[in-house]
Length: 168
Image (cartoon, rainbow, N blue to C red; front, side):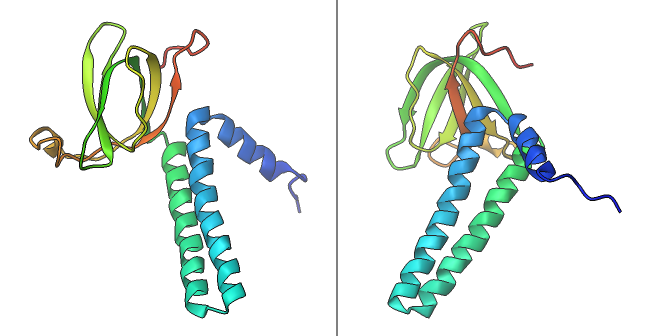
């Protein structure tokens, strides 16, 4: 019977995480620890207050949040995201939605307009590498106004430097 060496699993996890870009790793860590933290904090509060309903809700958040975090990890590991490199031309918030319109131009000057979920605005005239989660929009995003169009999820971004190589 062959048993794996001690630390083999952690080496495998480290290798897997090294293949994921650093900004996406940070997003995954935040996502995972947010749900774990909420679940543990809620469980501690429910124990201190002897509240069984809060305990059940906290355990539910912990379980389903962790499942959701591992689902996101699986999508990232399978390469279900795209990388956009370019210079941000403008980034404007929508007043009644938690998203913003980003106009980014590639190295040839071709601009793309993207609706991105979240409230983190990028600085215009700077070069960025964006990591966006693929979304199955079925083509209806082009016919809808911005207020109704589905927004894309940004997994992370980094400033463009000479050390970043072009992604094909």
